[in-house]
Length: 185
Image (cartoon, rainbow, N blue to C red; front, side):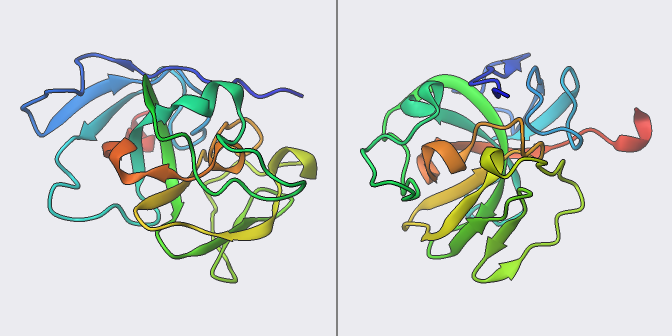
């Protein structure tokens, strides 16, 4: 089973150079289901991290690192070694992901796709779990480097994310995402 490699986020107005604090965007990716469904509108607060850092649990809009389209690490790895960082170059593709670990934290991913951060299995009732361990697993724990974030999609078997291309630099994060109200679906 192959996941969709990279699907751009279609924006109703561009994020770059935006003087408003929030912008509306329409998603066309399934990696954040069931939290955000394909075709739903979200709000992106482009100034959310002007005075504070992103936090674990935040859903963010980010510019995709250059190696995302190949779904592999930007550097050569030994067998079973996790990718410690993504490519430093950023593309014009926009992704929506959830931060599961921040700078200095140790992260691994169980065979069902659930994150273990600093040895603690995270309570993630919002995810779609994996049914095949080879799709989701990041068995060897890794420590997230300074000023980087480990991001995952909530649809773990479908998402291309930090399990494959490594943590993203803080410079890639464009803003905080407010998902649609589920009661309005």
